[in-house]
Image (cartoon, rainbow, N blue to C red; front, side, top):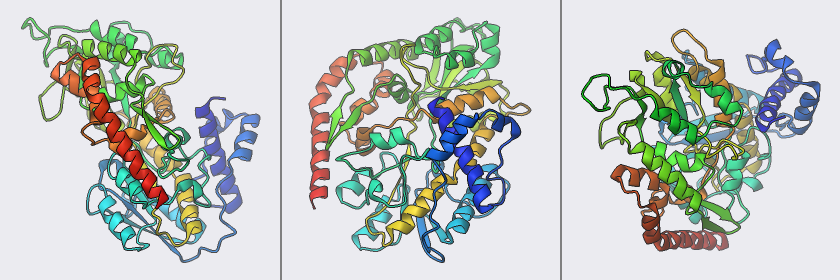
Length: 484
């Protein structure tokens, strides 16, 4: 059984088991006969035994309050819901909080930060020793360093009642953020991440006789070489001006600013990794040079790519129906539902067929817990339950993504499952995303391709010493905080 199937099976069976034991109402435990038939008895036994629902029945939490705070980012939109309003994702988010309150007997209070990253608000309360917020959500690269170097966070792997091995937590992302043996930031189903995906125009693909893209993904044959090759073969000068422009059919369109950052991760590479108490710079390699060379050749070729960099220049948009491919966030795909273009969703391609998995950097939202919490058991039980109850919110979001004007694309839904089980993170990018030195690797593809500078090797050579110094200073600050 694949890792993805294990995860989905565990979630479905945990929901069914909880409904049977505790009689929670609503749609929480509903699984269709068709879906249930796909789960073998052996898989069901494994999932049920390994990951039962979180149980806090031995705690008396009745009447206690837990306060959650999140930044005012669009990706945090469905963390909290004030009321049922008919929006499927909003309504499931509302039910999630209500279920947590009912099961644990607690009251959940939620707040939107007055600043977009919230860390300034939270830091003030921590410095004052005030247990104002118990569960904090934060966007990647915003405030993560400040929290840790000030000693403001409670290690999540020390937080009782939280099981980071459970399938509703994203273990690869969590482990990649482990530093000095501790986990301060976690990701899981409670967070609707906004990863990038490839959208493709089904009509153009069919007109050119391209093999089934969904099958290519499932067979491990969806690679950047195929992506580039197909895109190079569809350009048509529709307006007859002798060149390919925004009014012509082309291989690629859309904003390139973040899409080019995603390519490094899709090819199985990172800028940095954690090794014990240290962060190691791992960006530069022969493979990275090869990835960059191909990306540069493709994305600077205006006869194929009509992409653009936001706030800098205009370009063709995928909803015009004139391009074969685009890379965009899942949140951005929602806006295509009303467009007059029949499209499908795919994960970003692999480096080559030898690469075993698909990978995506989701520009993640993390959850963390301040050191000022007075009741770790209360906070741990609430956080674990909140994450466990999140599957219907995630499912509602995915349903919206695959519903067009009159169709439901089941194959794209399977692709979204692959995307959401393929998350990776980069500890250096999270802590140093806005550092002027580290940015030279994190944003290197985007920056150099925008400037049409193909000298990645020389640019890296000039920046390497400063990048290593930034990492060294960060690790020293974290070590000082842990000793204090």
